[in-house]
Amino acid sequence: MQDDVLIVHGGSPLEGEVRVKGAKNLVPKAMVAALLGEEPSRLRNVPGIRDVHIVRGLLQLHGVAVYEGDEPDELVMDPSSVELANVADIDAHAGSSRIPILLCGPLLHRIGRAFIPDLGGCRIGDRPIDFHLNVLREFGATVDKRPEGLYLEAPNGLHGAKIELPYPSVGTTEQVLLTAVRAEGTTELRNAAVEPEIIDLICVLQKMGAIISVATDRVIRITGVERLGGYTHRALPDRLEGASWACAALATQGDVFVRGARQLDMMTFLNVFRQVGGAFSVEDEGIRFWHPGGRLRAIALETDVHPGFQTDWQQPLVVALTQATGLSIVHETVYESRLGFTSALNQMGATIQLYSECLGGTPCRFGQRNFQHSAVISGPAKLHGADLVIPDLRGGFSYLIAALAAEGTSRVHGIDLINRGYEGFHTKLAALGARVELPPQQSGIAVAADAAGAVHSVA
Image (cartoon, rainbow, N blue to C red; front, side):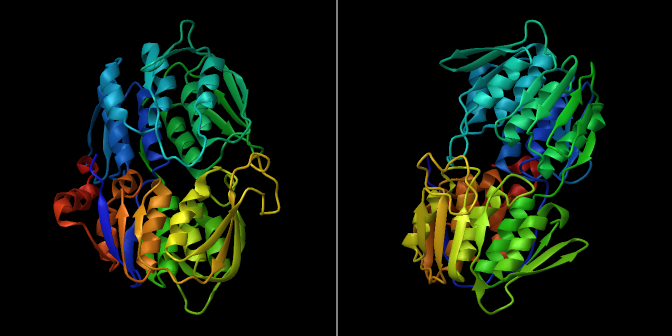
C-alpha cells in the first residue's frame, strides 16, 4: 500500500476562509436511511469525503441508484430495486469503514437478510459491535458469525423493543433508529446519544414518515410504521471540521473564517476556545476564529457525550494547548486510547505526560482499567518539524496542525486517512496560505485531492 506523504513547511499563520459542508457523522447515515424508503431521496450539502464514497458504493451494490442531483453537492438515491449484494463485493468495497453495520436494519426490512464484513475504523479505542448485534437481536434478528463476516436474517420480522444502553453510544443509537422506524410496535431507547447529528438523522427519518419523539432525559421513543417514503434534506454543517480549523487558527496564531459553521452546534467548543484565549465572532454565514495576540491560557478539560465537550474536538485542541502558558489537564472519557497521538507531539518538542488516573475530577468508566486517558500538557512549547505517521482521522488532522505550527519542515505520512472526514483539505490549506507540498511521485494524488470538492470525484 502506498504511503501517502505531505510535506509541511511550518511557522506561518493560517489566514483566509474555508467552507465546511455536511457533517461526516450525519451524511453517510442519512444515505443509509434512504434504503428504508419506497421512493427516491435527495440529500444536499454532501461533502466529497471517502466515507460518502464508500456508502455510495455500498448502496449501489445493493441495487440503489445513486446520482448527482440538480444542485451542487446534492445526491439522489433511488432504492426501488434493493437486492442482496455479493459478499466479496461488499467486503472489497467496505474496506476499513465501520458504516456497513448500519445497513443491517434497513436491509432486514427491505429484503429480509444482510451481510456485514469485518469492520475497521480508526484505532482510538475499543469500539465493539456487540452493542449493535445485541440491539438487532432484541428486534428479532438472528446473527450467524462466519469467517468472512456476519449473516443476519429476521425469520419472524422485526419487532419493537425496550432497550437501555450502558453508555450513550452514537453508533448504537443510530442502529436503533434505523431499525425501529419500520419495526412492528413501539421501541423505547434509554440512555440514547443526542448529538446534533443524531437529531438531524431523526429529522431525516421524520420527513420519510417515521414517528419519533425525543425526551429531555435521553429517552427516544419510536412508533414503527409499515412504509416510509423518500426525503429531501440539507445536512447540518460539520461542527467537528469547523472546530479543527478553529484550533489550526489558534495554534498558528492565524485568522480563519469558517463558512458554514453554526454557533448552536458549537456552543460548548466556543466557550472553551474563549477560555483558552482564542477569539471568535459569529456571523450569519459562519464563524471567524483568530488568535488575538498575547498568551494562551492553560485549562482543565473533560470530554463527554453531547452536550459536553466532544471527543473529536479534543485532539486538535491539545495541539493548541501546547502553546498555552502553564499546565493544562485533559481527561478523555469517551475513547480510552485517544491520547496515544500525543507521543508524536512530544517528539516535536511538546511536554505531555499521560496518566491512567481520572485527572479531570470526575471518575469515568476507564478509571480502574489502567488506560492512559488523562494528559497533562506543559506549555508553551517550541515545536519543531518531524516525521509523523497519522494514527487516526482526528489525530491525523491534529498532526497537520502541529506541523503547521512548528518551526521547520515535517513529513506527514498516511494523509489519505484524512480524506475520510475532511473534504479537499489540500485545497483548503493552500487557500489559507499553508506551505504544503506532495513529493514529486505523488503529484497525481494532489490533483485527485484538490478535485474532491465534487461529490462524484472522491478518490
